[in-house]
Image 1 (tube, rainbow, N blue to C red):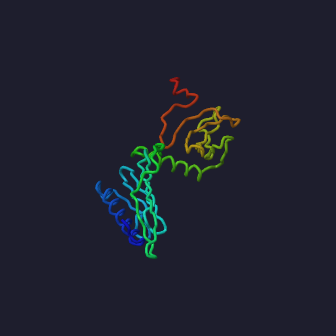
Image 2 (cartoon, helix red, strand yellow):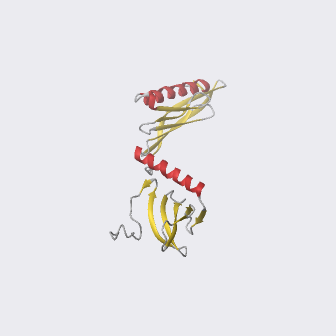
Image 3 (cartoon, helix red, strand yellow):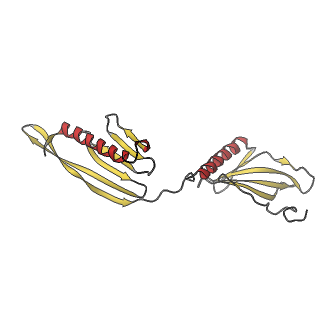
Length: 220
């Protein structure tokens, strides 16, 4: 089949739009998202439920050139080939059906920690806790390995004794995104003498003090 270049471009483009959209909307148009080029051809089509994604590349004649499909586990690339000829002084083109040029498994996505309602709630608590700590920090300490600790203003102890007060501490690790919070108490010299874990990545921790208090040991 030999067709003039401009006609071939439009025909291929229209066929791809119809084929791609009809394939995706078989599962439900409400879950299909399409990114369009200014020329009216699809740039990317995504099924928002399954994660299946098609990406389109076009040559300078707006002809489909390469298509990449991915579902998060496998990735396949098709490529069209066009051979140009000249007949009677007019440019002609012959199109070949697309062939697979790359077919491989891809690494599974690392969990973002937001796949369900509980995880989303924890993620919000984690981020808001870190933001609050940064805003309310009385002092900031950067550890040798890059972790950053935000200290709230020290609170005086309610009763006289070996502990002079305590401070709420939030630690952020830029290397892995982890956020931890705890309350640490200080002796009269300013050394940490007790720690009470409070939160890890938005999850509230119900834990004893370290070392345990007299009440936790059953002595009071």
